[in-house]
Structure formats: structure tokens, C-alpha cells
Amino acid sequence: MYRIGIGYDIHKLIEGRDLIIGGIKITHEKGLLGHSDADVLIHAVIDSMLGALALDDIGTLFPDTDPQYKNIDSTVLLKHVYALVKKKGYHVVNIDSNIIAQAPKMMPYIPKMKEILCKILEVDPDDISIKAKTKEKMDAVGQKLAIEANAVVLLEK
Image (cartoon, rainbow, N blue to C red; front, side, top):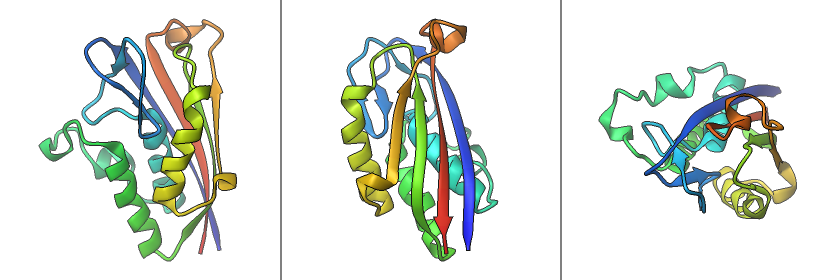
């Protein structure tokens, strides 16, 4: 049995925070605003897995009103969600994802992001696609005010 899920996340860029995407710190003058580390890629992957299993979304599972999640490393949240996936008898077949940012350039960081995701989700690098896109200077992302990500996951029982 297969299940497919779609995830999406967006966070505002602000000064005074580290930029964490795909579980790694990226060199940039701004970081993403959020209750956790605001890792848009991992949040999109988490929501895609939760959606595939018809479970609550990331904000319900890890509410921003709960102090235990304040500044939490999103890889910790991903490990928790993948444990739920395995508990239901599923595993990840593949993930296709996009990071949409006008700046900074994401391509140099993608191999390390894939390495981190592969380790947590117990898949090979050929099973995860992370693509870097821009908004061609349109909307809040294109004006360097935010970064967004989306992801699609295929799970198999």
C-alpha cells in the first residue's frame, strides 16, 4: 500500500537568527523567524509525511505555544515524525522537494542537506530530491523577505 503527502512551509527572514535549512546552518546575514529553528525544508517534509498518513499537521503536533519546542532543532522533530511513520508500518520510498529563496544560493548546501535527511529517514541519496528555486524577484520571497519550501513524499507499507 502506498500513501502520498504534500507539505509546505514559509518563514519570514529577520536579523539576529541563524539560517537553518535542511538541518544545516547556512551562511547568511538573516535567519528565519519561528518558534523552533524555523527550518522550512524539514517542516515541509514533516508535513508531507503527516499528510500521507492523514495525521495532524506540524503546528498541531508541535504547537508554538509549547515551550519545549522553543528553538528546537527541527531534525529532532523529523526523527519523531519518522518514528510515527515506522510505527504505522510505512517507510519512505522517495521525497521530491523545493527550497524557494531569492538569496542565499542553496545549491552549495544541498548535498549536506540530503546527507542529513537520508540518515534520519533511512533512505539512499537517490531517493531524495532537493531543488533550489527563486521567485524571480517577485512577491515576499523574491524580495528577500521570506524563504519557503514544499515537499512531496511517497510512503510504502
